[in-house]
Length: 401
Image (tube, rainbow, N blue to C red; front, side, top):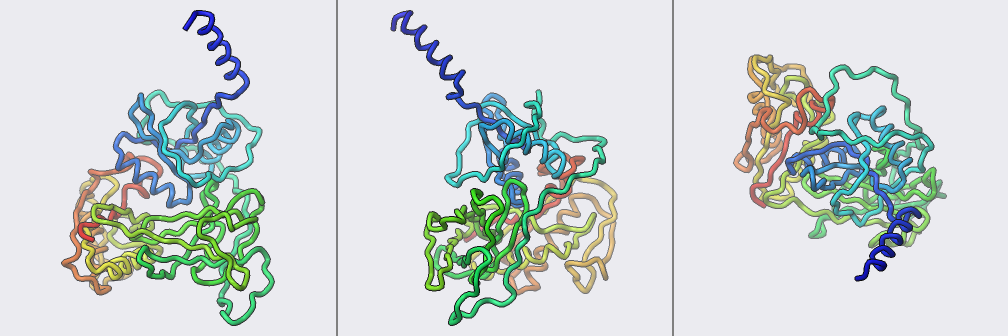
């Protein structure tokens, strides 16, 4: 190649770059980890909070970044970064500009219209797992704009009666296992940018889904049943026929099928919705739903053997632990007992509580094992604002399927 040819190619590249054909990617990053299993757990936590969390590899730093938005629009990324910092638990979010090695999902990312406000591109000099703020500012958090909240129909429409006029459009969500077993559960219509539920629908019923406030925004319908991999359907409200396997029944309703894959031997699933009272092995009332899903998982899979991993936020010594009393009130402090212990013992007692709940609901104790980690496997530093949610956790490992 001659020197004039090389110069010509350089000039062409500069022209293309100046005209914006070489697009720069911006990532809204909520966390960074060197250990992949921690990155996976944090990604799952963010997805459980209804964010479209994905992973990218920063090759030079050897870090896995967890991001919730990738875009060529800097204003859009800046606005979302600012909102997450001010209005959510992900207050250490930063805006990263540069290359990441990613494996993009085939599902489109739902995006908000960009705002005019700017914030500078921020990349920490040394990426900590989590930035701990000693004195967080107590500023009033602006309320996000609410979209109309939908409620599922109290009474399902009878099969032999016509559907009443729809306010939006009728859908029926069908959930089955890979072997065709039908599941009765709930699916969630979520705003994956704001990270919140817009509506919850019961499966196998006709539901009247309202038109999105922004007609160009697709519906994100999430189905998560413990014991199965989470499934997401991105639906064009204006033309649901574009959704894979969608059909329209004789009533004109759109039938959207979900086929869930069971967990297999070696899989580990975090019980994000199981929480415990402070320094206690007693679960909060909201934990019952996922605990019952665990019971159902064990009933549906009689060959399953599991290990219940208990994790704790640190290994504090000489703490006063609240334990189950004789009446075994799993979801309330009434009738509880107390004892002295440490962080590792607390994680063991919490794993035993989960095991005991399974046994009391007909699951053979021989199908379960427990392991107490204490604070050895914390996902974030103990002083972080999200430490209690992420570090105090139960994980279920499939030992035999």
